[in-house]
Length: 442
Image 1 (cartoon, rainbow, N blue to C red):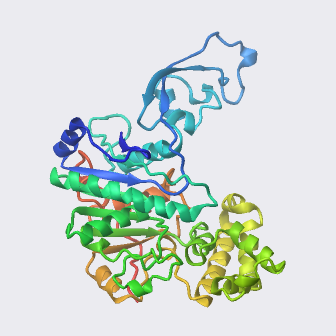
Image 2: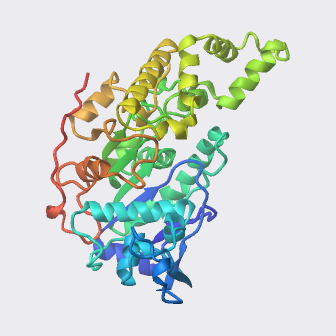
Image 3: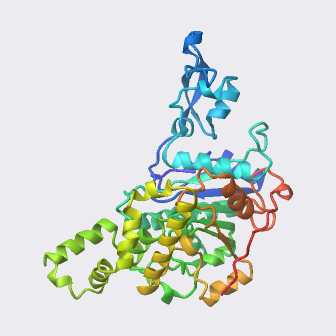
């Protein structure tokens, strides 16, 4: 898998890589999200064997075999997806006999490398033309690494990193376009800001339709980001408008879910109040001790003080902190649906009460904007509501069967709505699922 380094000033392709993508005629880039370390690829498995024949007393009666196989590792890196099932098939052994600690990170690497491997695997599977038996059509993607691992409480800094990284991506897009390669981009979370910043620069420089299709999945940008009206940008830093972006791409698909807790309260606090939760509470505590007397006339501080006394805000915080976000996401069934709906309703009340905009990846584009309305009618912006299946913020990395069908195969690898080409696969054999319901422009 080719990728750009988080630390390279200039992303570059080797002549062999350019020749590979020119031969295919297309390329798919994937841009990861916020706060993911660079990580590394996993080593390849060299052998799987049992040192000694187990006695009957050692054999688990239920599993039929013990977890007693030894795995030895090669010095070579493994750069395609692997799983316990695939290892068992490759080495002709039982999956149950493999070591219990043979987990995803050991098989597929860590950090952004792990994301690249999973997303490449998901896209190949979504074609319905790959099943791990014939690898002749298996197609590589290019992972775009950028330094977004600034710490979970330093979200704002990642915006600066994303915009800087977009400058390098811009040069890469120019290089690919000049080579006659069709370009598709799949981006997640803050990676969508990298993509939009790059598209904005391309559009500003009259690079009309240099990119074929962009898929923005759980985009951590304002829902007004695709508008050409700068006055809609209410972000604290006034950096949420990408008014030229649509000029540089033929089609944009927005995949969003209202069951994303990261793009609810944490997002609008950081984007519109310019405070992380920890900074918020620190300022409130200091103001109550009169350590910030000069800030009492500050509009933002007044808003924070108002938020602190807002019962809906308190309820929303309680919903997040009850068992922690991870604990809440672990709840299943009807209870999970009920809690998710409660948090969505409260979040919506607060957004409206304080005149904020939500995240593009949470509610989709701002449908009151006439430009966005027209783009949707013209088919240039496609709305993909993943709320029924998209729980959490990174649900696309290791997708459920529903996310594979209703996300990857309905919107990305789809004959009507998705990419026109992906790697070496026959696009006429891509899935042709139709959306269960179409979003209407209000």
